[in-house]
Amino acid sequence: MDKKKIKENILATIIGLITVVVLLEIIFRTLLPAARLPESTFDVSYRIPKFLPGKGQYTIGKFCIKAGKWHINAEGWNSPYEYINDNRPKVAIIGDSYIEAFQVDVEKSLGPVLQKLAGSQYHVMSFGTSGAPLSQYLQLSRYAQKFKPEIIVFNLVHNDFDESIVPDNTPATYLHYFQVNDTTFKECAIEPFKKKGFASTLVNYTATGRYLLHNLKIQEMNLGTSGTQKKSTDSLPVYNANIDVKKVTALRKEITAVTHQVISTLRAEHPDTRIIFMMDGLRKEIYDNTSVEQSNIRWMTTMVSELCHQHGVEFIDLTEAFAADYQKNNTHFEFPHDWHWNEYGHRIAAETLYQQITSKTN
Image 1 (cartoon, rainbow, N blue to C red):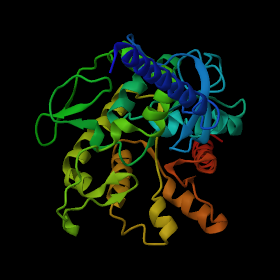
Image 2 (spheres, rainbow, N blue to C red):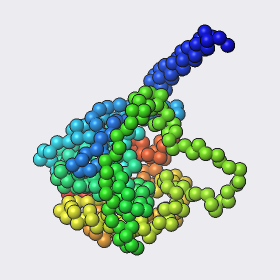
Image 3 (cartoon, rainbow, N blue to C red):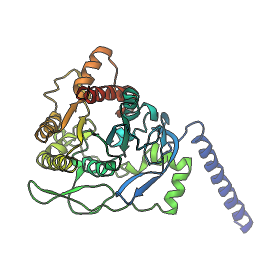
Image 4 (tube, rainbow, N blue to C red):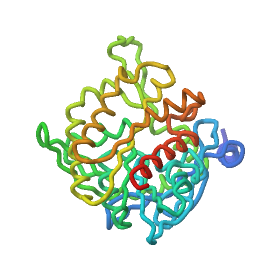
């Protein structure tokens, strides 16, 4: 093949690749709009990650199902309004992706719905980032103290506990604990997350890159060979509430110890603040109409309830509210494609929380 033909083939290949890239960008910006997430930043004063102000649309899955429109306020949190240090009593709601709530429109998430219910009684502030475990909630409560909240609410889900524990004293962006002995855990150092490199930034800037990262989640895929050996039923993980039940149950002793340490530390650091722990309901058991008390993860709810009582902290088990509502309305509290609360779930949770807050203030 002569040099001219080689050059023509190379040029044709380049043009073809550019055409494919352009077409994919058009598709993932129009027909299948890729998820857009806010840019993260690190607050060095309080050593917590949060977001840079902005707004966008989050989508879920390979078909880019429209989820929530998010709005990051000046303080760096997903909220339709700004956080103001006025004379209203403050309610700080702390949690992970359930409080971050990119899956629903920002005004329909727990915090803003509670704000509507409360009116001028309270100024409600939400502080949530995906993947934050219970240990990070302690760090977020230290940040929230800048607003001097009268009430701090910690929204718990079932993967908050084991993810608080790491095997060694390795610094990470979120606060974690490492085990010193059977009953004592120590806080790990916190380090800012590393800035993204040029390639990572470029991928995240393109709609195609965002589709691969956030919609397909290729970074979480197991690309290794599946193997041909058949595993026994006993070796397979059992999932409930998005956790590996066997793995978490094996850590029951450690989870109880670290939860005790977090709650006792919270009580000591916020002695004059009203503290409420609100735990996600046992939704699978509710839908299956099976015994809640026989649930393989019921012990986690019971553990938190007992520790809250021990330390003079209020506790809400959303199982009761969800079960009563489901029996009446037969409506699920999450999406068909995602275990996070949908708008309905956020509303029922907000109404339940509002009843708890006002029951002791009216």
